[in-house]
Length: 124
Image (tube, rainbow, N blue to C red; front, side, top):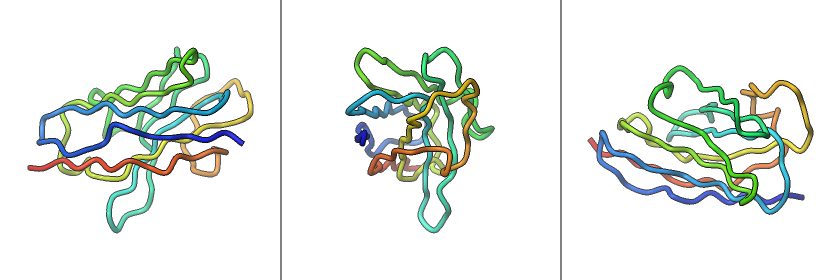
């Protein structure tokens, strides 16, 4: 069993930036970020393949968010720029335990491991 721990959340003003981290306790393959706003379902934000050279984003974060990973540190990152109040949510990282050629996994059921989440609040 691999554990995932998110960090880096907090309160930021609109237009500001935050960087979230997701530390894993072991090796994982493709990873992703999801978020859940109050009263809404959890939604996909973006994904990264296991080597870290390919990423995929949902439309509402393209150009603002960047996913990266450092496998030597067993850590994935989510750099969030130009934050908007509608980005307010609990952000979750997720990881797959199986290798796959494709990495654009957008469904919650595609992932085997989940973190506990970190709160991001963007004030207007």
